[in-house]
Image (cartoon, rainbow, N blue to C red):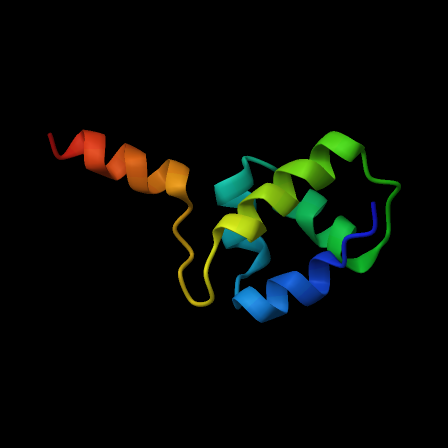
Length: 74
């Protein structure tokens, strides 16, 4: 599976820190994956891809976080 994380992140206008928060990964991991500096585990790429796929352009709230916010307000 070939995923251009950098391209997807630019399209979604999301920062390393925001993606790290949404995926539960460390910012350093996101940065290394984005720059292609590391051999990335499939599970890590899957987490990143899943979050990026859920995000609409300029909407940095994943469905998981939306559900949590909804539950907190009840």
